[in-house]
Each structure stands twice: as structure tokens, then as C-alpha cells.
Amino acid sequence: MLDSISIATSPIHGQGGFATRFVSKDARIIEYTGERISKVESLRRCQEENWFIFGLDEEFDLDGNVEWNPARFLNHSCAPNSEAVCEDGRVWIVALRDIRPGEEITFNYGYDLTDYQEHPCRCGAPDCAGYIVAEELSAQVRSRSHHAVPKNV
Image (tube, rainbow, N blue to C red):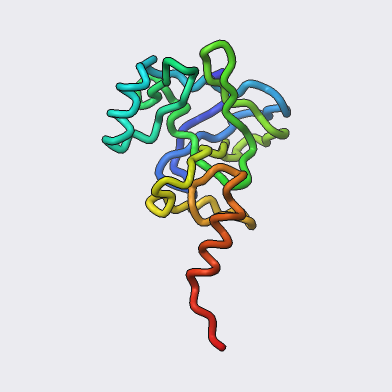
């Protein structure tokens, strides 16, 4: 699966993962790997601003901030072409639609509203929320942002 992506400079942020071949809808693109850690350790690492952690189950999380995890370079998008799917204690990045060679592979990080203003989004999608938040929170964040902008009367 690693042969289906290459890591290169991203117009979204820093490095990104790009399709090296055609990827069909519903295909597993890459596994998001890392260190299996307890919830207590996960909380500690999150407080140290580690943004590479996935919840696995009630007991464990996965810290993807490891050298052997190229999926950590995949960027957030408000209009993603893939999603993270947790299956049997493993996290897979799965295509939501067909992806063309050269296209950047993105997924929605699913952040909540806690400190969301510290995570501006640069995905460039037409309906970008402006911040890295879960899709179901995008409209709420967009309306908050519009209310914050003073209007000329």
C-alpha cells in the first residue's frame, strides 16, 4: 500500500501524501500506524500538543507520531477524499471517492470544538470551515466566524 502514496511538499500544510496511482473508491490507501498507548498516556501526550493520536477503543489510543508512519503526513481537509476507519484495533485511510494520480490524499481530522481556534484550516475547499473541526461541527464554526466579523450598517 505504501506504493500508492508519496510524501511531498503540500499546498495545504508542510508535507502531504499524494496518490502515485489511481485509487478507487472504498480502497484502503494506507494504514495509520503508531504506538499503542493507554488513555492516561494519550492525555499526557495531547497536553504536549501531539496532534497525531487516534482513539482506538475504551482502553487504548494510537500515537502516530512515529518515524515509521508515513500516514502522519496526510493533511486535513474540509472536503476530504478519504476517511480514517478504525477496524479491529487498526486505523486505515480509505478512499471516499476515486482519487487520481498526483492528487493530495486528505481526510477530516475530526477535531472537536475545544480550542478549535488554535487550529486554522488551510485546505482551500470552497466550503472550508476555517478551522480543523469534524464535519458535523463545520456549519457551527462557520456561523461563529461570521458573527465575529463586524458588519457595516
